[in-house]
Length: 626
Image (tube, rainbow, N blue to C red; front, side, top):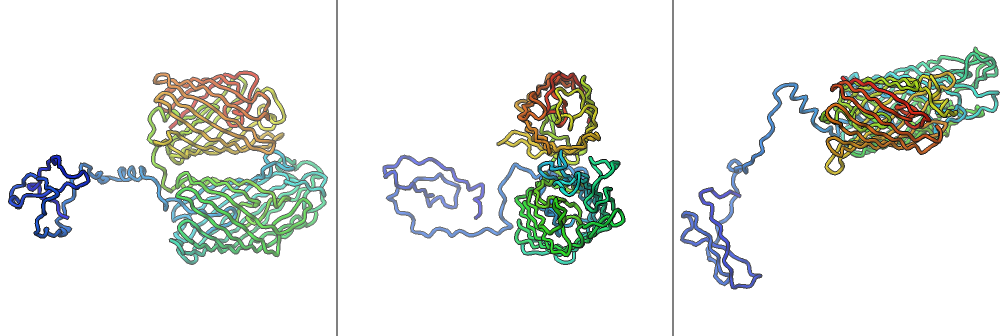
């Protein structure tokens, strides 16, 4: 309806008390003599009075062109004036549903998804049983690295490498000692859309994927089994010598997907893997191997919001070859099953965990179960990086928060350095520990990390310590840290997770472990922050775990006091696993810090945080950021 003209605004006045019942409504009227004249004052009408018999004026809609919008004091933001302002505006927006890439695989099963044109995805995957089996340590690990790139909107190219070198998981009674098992794969594949578009409920897509790979198979030595030993048994013949072969293999699949609704996608994948049927023919006699295998795969993925996808898949081998063998070296066909979840920190970073019995990490070997133990459940972890995808908004750290993003010593913080930041650090102590590390933030919420060094002077010693932190043994670690929650009005906490992989490279060990921790940081005041840091080291010899507690107190502009304690719940490293540290941090500049500390932890990095020491160490850590 039309608004009254400002010149006709009426002066409202409170009604005088009326003798009528309180339940009676108060009516108002305008004296007839003043209608159309200057606005009069309103006068109350007694309920007993009779209203005018004249019909009220009808209401009429006002043409749209004559509607006057209500006044507002809020002005729209100015339009970006240059490319830098456009990029700044885009970087401040939260990613939406369409910014997150679909899953390229459901466990071992390929999907119909393609990386967008001129974009790429880099991923790392590890699969390993829950215990070491006959291999000991962290067991039969298989590592996979993969790069996917969108050549066109309908064509994707991939290159990959996988590596496994542990002795077989289950005992082999027919051999005098446990044979080693070496699998390496170099390969590439193409995935092309044949039909369909895959947008919206009820849509479908059909693609074809072909792969060509060089599959190296070694049996009898490798890893912890020396190839120089005489009489090394293998699983293919009784020659007592190692068998080492290189095989050209391949795979062809036709994934078909159906998008049942916005959240649920179903997949049906007929495929064939071309694998050799024997090995070692010219190295002491040919022995049975997998052979060509036709298989059918089914899978489903369910998307919960923007960032979480649940998935499951099954690959059913149909022959004529096999995809598994047991401890008696009897070959058979077993389904390869996977179930898990993929969590996207943001469109650039994806983290995935699943349970599977599938050991192969390439298209041709994906149908293969764990050698010697085909029904053994394994944990699969995968990390994916999409460099060209949108990032989370910048956290816009204060100088104080930027210093917290440098981390602690033996207790970590939840803040990660902003996108594009490089960190380098050096650490040494009075007991002989020497470590160095580097980190690079590929997102505002994720940092790649790499570290190497040696442990020394850990007392007391036992077999666990000797295996993973022997004196002078080189330790290599790589992984990443992801920030998953920023402070809100309801929960003023920073929260993050970190995972690292690696092993003791000494020939007497060659054993590794997975280190996982969660970090939670609360800024109690502008000068005081507290950190809660549960952590564990998982390996075939047991799982060591504990909880770290720490504070960071700002002492003026340049110094911080950092007290820390790790409460260790297990005694794998000795009864005095719990440890504490006290550090003084000098903020020499915005890019340089120096920590001086005393600690009875075996070390300030990964497993060292869960090992106590009988003697106190005095150490220093120098860090640079740029």
